[in-house]
Amino acid sequence: METRKYTRSLTETRAKVHMAKPKRIYLAGPEVFFPHEEHNAIVAEKKRLLREAGCEGIDPLDTALTFSDQETKPARGHRIYQANRELMDSCDAIIANLTPFRGISADPGTVFEVGYMIGQGKAAFGFTMDCRHYRERAGAADRDELGHSIEDFEMSDNLMIEGGIKESGGQLLVAEQPGEHRFFSAELFRRCVQALNDQLHSRE
Image (cartoon, rainbow, N blue to C red):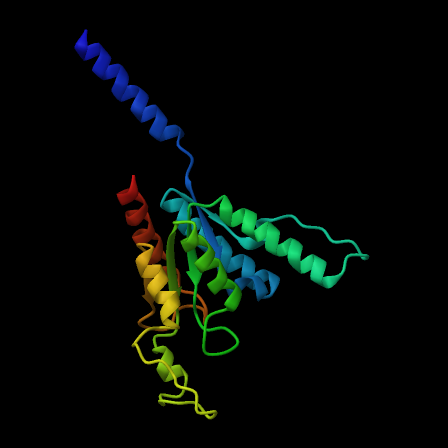
């Protein structure tokens, strides 16, 4: 009788695991600003690598928004924000492309999304294709041309970004060599996915 109960319990457990929904991973990054084909190619590769790990990649442009000619640009912007926030709320973790974009730091929208997810107690991981520390990108000086101090903590970007990621249990992975794209490396992203998967499983 005990053997039957144990067998039934084990079968039920396996069934639950099999039916469990894959973890949803929000894919933050400047790719949303790339030309259509370039964006789609990178996102498709990210989603493929996540599927291999048993996860589901969620891109900010997965939302189906339509705009009327009467809608103002600020109103459109707010709707995009709300749609992206709802996507983040539906996700279990975030992988952010923190490669410097339009300057020496990561895309500010991406940085906000990392902070938003960390604020919800969700795992945050990131990667950057630029191996230089923030100070080096800022000119390797103690102060800028206006006399403002430049932080020097041997981090890839502002300390609040890397500090927040680490405190969430995540990692910021840095490319050791150029990838197939200035803003993306499949191998680096694969390592990021593996680290995230290990962290998610440790929480279960």
